[in-house]
Amino acid sequence: MVNRTPAGRWFRRVTGVAIVSNVMAALTLLAAPSTIAAMAGVPASRTDLWPRLAAVQMLVLSLFYVPAAIDIDRYRAVAWLVVASHLAGGLFFMFEPAYRLFGYYDFAFAVPLAVLLFLAVRGERVGGPVSVVTL
Image (cartoon, rainbow, N blue to C red; front, side, top):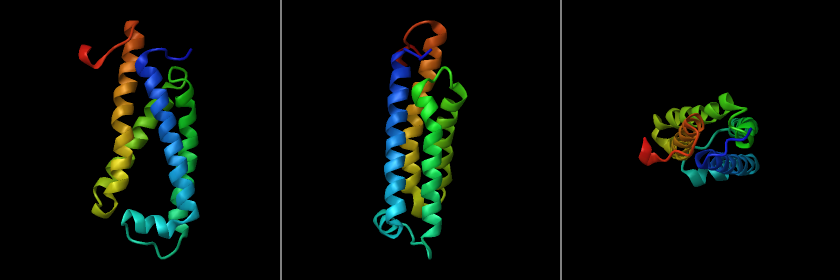
């Protein structure tokens, strides 16, 4: 059964945006890793292998987000792992100043997804929609 709370619907939408955003970024990185590195202001790699590997891993990770974008109740653990992966990515990149842009990117998804998932799960247990005001 699909979570019908407003927060659940928004969680699925934001997860969908994250999937599309990650896929677009990964495909762009696969096509032109040196150009993307220059545009992001990060040090260029001596070889294109490592940025392309990161892009492939981002594509694969995005595929694992799909179940949570479809049904957060049936795939609750996956939904929490979507949040955890964005938090982990954000924390990973925050400690290297040259790569903080990537950390901001992940945090831009992690924070709203965490709040929305919390509200959706809580709203489902209570039996109705929950807003931030009621917390």
